[in-house]
Length: 152
Length: 152
Image (cartoon, rainbow over all chains, first blue to last red; front, side, top):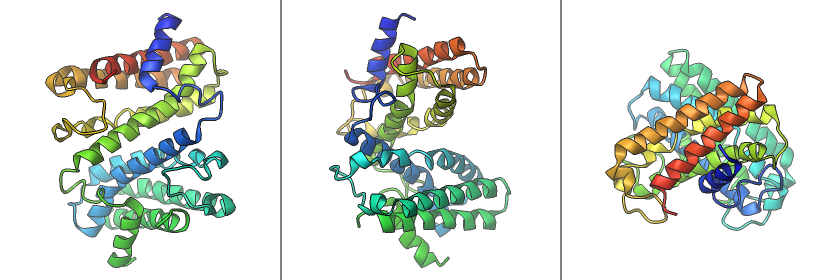
């Protein structure tokens, strides 16, 4: 494939603003959009699991296993989007505590990731009670981090 | 954890519109937002690889391996968001061909997923030339699918 074709393909594929993220600091609005995208997808794949725990959705071990696997990857994605450059950015509910209490924010990320890893492990156990407890722990971590670091 | 606490945590975690996606058809605007989020993250993690291929970003095998793994999961996420209910939705560049030529759209998804899987395999080979060829193939698939199914 020619370099010319590739450049065109990349431009088509990604639109403005993405191709230079590794060579220059991404723009704050791009970082905000990317981190919000990761949160949106966490919501997409956690939502049905929360529904199963509440009894609003029939329990389905295959969906739990699939979504838990997706969440394990997604749980790694938002955090580099909370760069200092995004302080004061528009269209975000991120609270200043993200930067003024960075250690606690980091700890919350790690606890969330641990809870998701525990859900992945539980989803392989075939033990529905264990799976539901693990779903509850993930939900608790989502909620407490939002409580502390996201505008009401 | 009490059901009451969990409901509150879920509401906090997800905001309106997510918790019922598995029991009722998600709203078109939610589906559009979710599929665009998956595309945004594909851009985030493919961007640097495209930069490496073009020589704009220093080659880094670890970044390639990590991003390829993320892309493998992300390549599965957008497609169920192109539900019939989203035809004519606002704020999307999705073309009608997605629904009028559904077989070709499905084939494009599968070719893209194959190209990403090949990139994952190449990233484990330690062969930079092979990795770069695989990055090119992924970019080509992004571009051709956007050519056919996304408004210019």
